[in-house]
Every structure is written in C-alpha cells, then in structure tokens.
Amino acid sequence: MAVNPILYHYPMSPYSEKVRLAMGLNNQAWTSVVVPAQPPRRSLDDLVGGYRRIPVLQIGAQFYCDSQLAFEALSGTHSDVGALDADDEALRRWAEEEIFFAVIAAAPPLKVLKYLLGQLGLVGIARFVRDRSRMMRDATVTVKASAVAAAGIAEYVFHVDRLLSARPYLSGSHPGYLDLCCYHPLWMALAVDRGGAADWPLRVQEWITHMGELSHGAAASASRRSIAEAITSDQVEISGEVSMPHHYGETVAVAPLDYARDETIGELIMLNDERIVIRRRFDTEHPIYLHFPRRGFEIRGR
Image (cartoon, rainbow, N blue to C red; front, side):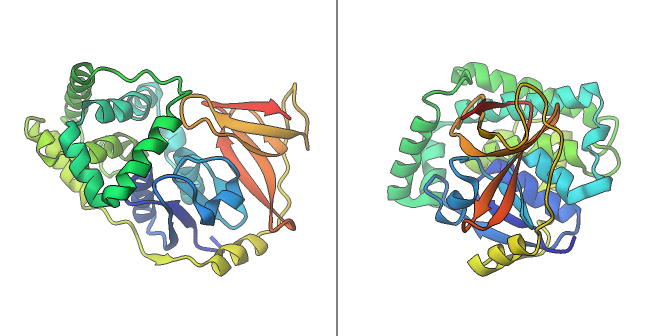
C-alpha cells in the first residue's frame, strides 16, 4: 500500500477489535484515530456525514464503512473472505448478526455498569446510554430476553467447540477472517464478564486465549494533517456501473437497515450486488469515496 491505513475506532468497540486484529494478521503498519464511543465525532463526522457505525477504515481517499470491506481492502488478493463456503458464511452471520446482540442482552447489568464506568467514567456512561437508546429507537433488531440470549450463546459456543475439534482455528491451521468474525462478540462478552467463560469447553477457552494473544500490528497516532495528506495523495477517479433504477452521479442517501440507521448523502458512483460507493467532498475540493456493502443497507434517491 502506498499509504498506511487510518482506523477510526474506540477501545471497547468489538468490530474495531476485529479490524485491529486484522491489521496484526496482515503485519500492517497503521495509524489510529480514537473517536468517542458515541457521536459527535469531530474527526470523522465531516468526512462520512451522518454514518455513525464504528470502525471506519481509511486508505487514501477510500473510506470503508464496514468491517468485511475493511478486511478485504487490507488483505487485497490474499483475502480469505471469498473463500467462505455456505456453512462458514452461515456461522459468520450467526456470530455477527445474532450472537453480537445476544451478548449485549445476556450481560449481567451490574457488570456492564462496572465495565462502562471503567471505560467511560460516570458522565460518559450517561451520554453513552442516552445515545444507544436513541440509536435503537428505530432499529429493526429484536433484542431477546436475557435467558433466551444466554441459551443462544451457549448453543453457539458448543457449535464452535465442535468445529475446533477438527482444526486449531476455525479458518484452518492459522487464524483467518472467520476466526475474527466469530471471536469478537465473545471478546466483548469476556471484556464485560471475564468469569462468563468458566463453563465454556476447554477448546473454546484455549482458542479465545490464542486469539487474544494476536497482535494489533504497529500503530501510530494520526493527525488531521496526515488524514488530509492521505486524501489528497489519492486522487484517482473512481467509477463503476450503477444498477437500475438508480443512475451514475445521482444524489442518494445510504443507511443501514437494522440499527444505527443514520443516513449519509453523496453522489452515487457504483451500485452492484456486492457494493455501494458514493462520492463526497473533503474541504469542498477533494473527492472522497465511501464504500458500503449492498447487503444490509438501503439506498434512496434525494
């Protein structure tokens, strides 16, 4: 890569942990912008508009607003995302679309409060809770009762244990993309309640230990100047096909379908079965490109 990736993240974000570990797997030097756990995020808001999910990965003028797209961008032709078969893809979705929320629902409230207090402080907790309540107000996600969520996590852990009986990592002999996807919800669960793994199978506990020992790679702090220089050094015009009923250059709003449904607006320059790309402007002059997955996002004309 001509420039080091810039990751916008915060420490307790599980999807950020997924991408931080991807940096380590790729032996990638990167630069870090630590943002607040909730908007406003001054270093990021003027770049991505209303989009609020974290992390966001910047490589030059390209902004990847999804952890899978970020992994593909980091790994390039070496990415194993496309190697997931139907069973592995089903497991990934189970981990990231169901277990992620089950972990939140099943967590003991007092331990959640203690964890958030250590991460955010008393004032920060109040802001975080207010923000998350607003974020989930129009969500389409069904949050399960605590006991039901805990049973779902136990079933998931048992399934992971069965897979690990045949190989040291879910991806094979070495950790890969599937491991990152399946690990980060459990990383979040154990960050809140370390004792929660006491009853999990030994193989799963050992796998979690090995995943936790992986490196984040070499990170340095990014400055506003380095962010701007990365953008201005990458001024290759991006274009692609746009599927009907939309057209190239149309002003559109893009937003997630499930939660954190804040929209961001830009010029549509690519739309296919896999990806949405819109163009925005940095400091009114230089184009930047926001990449979203097609699945799980909606696009509307403005």
